Image (cartoon, rainbow, N blue to C red; front, side, top):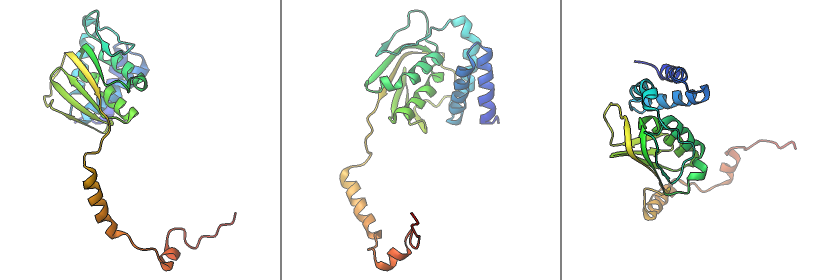
Amino acid sequence: MRSLSEIDTTSKRASRAAGYPWGISEEVGKNIRMLEMFGLPGIKNLNDFLKKKKEYQFENLNLINLNNKTVKSHFCPIIAGISFLDQIKSLENLNEIKFEKIGYPLLFLPFVSRASEVIGKRLFLKLDNREFLLNFNNYIYSNFIKNNIIEVANVVSIQFLNNTDSFFEKEWNELYKLSEDTFVEETDSLKKSGAGAGLTDND
């Protein structure tokens, strides 16, 4: 089994050899490492994408809008992802962003996951009928379980989810009340033995 370090390095070098600058290639390396770590077919999709990159003539998407439509064939997932991550601070107040025809969209996904961490919000990504809940770049919940190549997603959407608790206030109050049973009333002996006791301030 290949190590994550090998996956990162080889993906980075292959992307550079395919014509991407070193800076972007380094981002690709990190992303493929992340996909493989989460059990998604990063190497498989990157390999196929780089082989067909010249043939498909992917369109670069540099400025992200509310609705993004291609005028050629398919958006390049790497350039679209870089643009999304770079512009996330100005996009985070939107409820939903839509894209038309992103090629090899699994290569776009890690940029969205990393954006979730940057803004501290969960993001809900849909690639046609495939759904991905991205949680602060810590884990991914998805209904996509196949280890295969996705050449294009015709309809892509990203929803910005508000941070909310998964419990009711009543449940929190009940649990907090139970936790109070561990509280100990402070006494003189506890004060003397507590953290910082016995230290002398020389200032």
